Image (cartoon, rainbow, N blue to C red; front, top):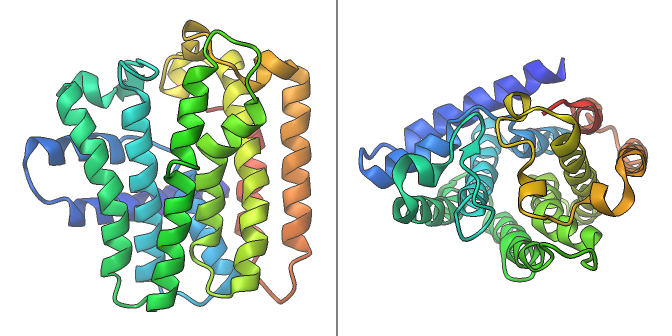
Length: 285
């Protein structure tokens, strides 16, 4: 059931990207290369499921927020794969952006998607000004020098080491954007803060399972090099805690998150968000 839900999210996200990125320039083609590649669209799915909790936003605004968060995520993937970073040749079952379009164009495509995320939010005519400001702040905090970028820097510094703080790295590099995805659609400030905290646990669980799948999954299933972290001597949750403990900790984080979602006040539509939480620890890619 959740696979169908996420497939529907992915279809609407892809269509909106095609509506927005109409130029036939090389940088536009490079942008589309990454955003239209097969993906689970977990972050966009979380946006939609969170929006369903409150039931305040219309479909157009929900779709815009889905696309904005996927644009931001795709930017991070393009830059993450660059030779100066993780130097990965495959992403989402196809050549990484810099392999397909060259390093310079890949950098520009990533930069453009980063900017596009904010442009999409700013151009939405249905969101209130206050809500737009909150969304932009969430994205900025999640992806800036104290968020995802710092996580990437700490990740780079930890290569070949066993002394880095893996929980902090994962919380910043992956968890913060997932947390923002959960909070972005919410107009009620108290509910937004509650979900932001829940999202931090969901985000950490997601990245722990990514580390697990790096060890247990195949390159074909993952759509990327299944031994990339080993090749780059990365500090991972599995290398620090071991495979069994990593899985158990991810399960505990998801169980904790689901319980908090169930306990939310009000007659919210919680079903799809809970199903996404369960999917995060049961997925095979």
